[in-house]
Length: 437
Image 1: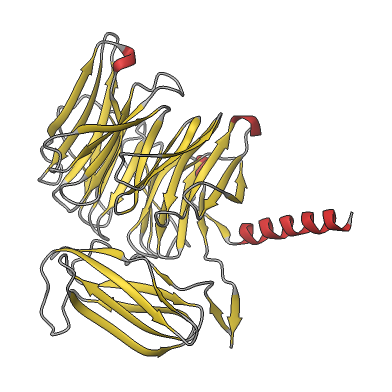
Image 2: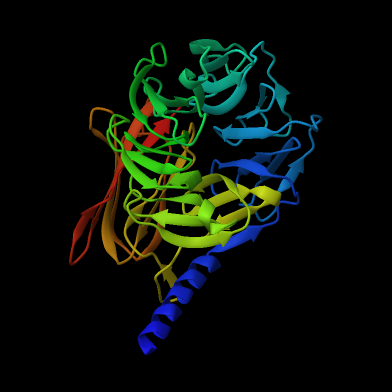
């Protein structure tokens, strides 16, 4: 009996600890918020129904509502490339863009009769959108690209189907660089309809089906290089590919839904999980092994529809104006300073950047540290060396110059952290940095 009581106490304590790291932020609205994005730890935006656009400049302590003269529109996705440049897609083929941090939004006019489902911009000119439309006698699924910031859209792939069960309704798209990208499509007739994974390696000039998953999968995110996460409805509610979408580790669970998700790395990340058998309860789950096991962090009544991870903070948004932020877990305190739980190199922010970017890393014990930045052929172009750093959280700022002060060209760079102390040496997972001059 004592063992049972102790086990229950530990479970309660674990849940309480996780619940305490989630804080509710006051959005000031009661509508459904569908997506959220942050470009750094302070500057973020969220969008939703009734033409709702929210912004914050203090990490969500205060959210400001942007009044927009389209009261009956819903905004589905939002992406900001920097503090100033952002894009929104919404209902009735709506595309918005801003160049002044969201103070003013311009409607992009076009003749596309599609319901837009996802967007991805690599820079202020080059971007892609997926969309589809179901008519009484046929359906259309499209992938579109712009090279001028959205003024003109080229239909790279359009599939018209007169058979409901052969439709290719594109629902999600992501690019890891200007050439390589993936898109999801299916007929979405029921939960077991196949989802087809399309891939391009030539900037979208050609798209090919490389695999399929036998269930509805509508959202795709790049977790790490060629590691992809997809999620959707029942049976294979969450799947991971480590080889660029050719093969999939399927997390099969009937009547289970991964409404939205957010990878932290190829193996680690969060999902909002909804299971039909659990009534109306939604859960935030965390995995550190690509979905083989899950740890419950939070229970909610609202659907969570969007997630954004920047540095050590994760934001989630959903129904009834819900916005929450997850604070990092700390495992100990030394001399009054919070000590991280492990060595960790975080994704830089902002990314992409065009003036300077901040690289954050954690040390759980006093260590010697080398931060190296490599170009695309593997040459070290910038080094930060610390012969002795105390345990804790540290930052370095890269201004785009090499060790000799020469400004580097735009492109992709790799950052690696090497940590050495008295007992061990460790090289953390590298991060990819995008520099845009």
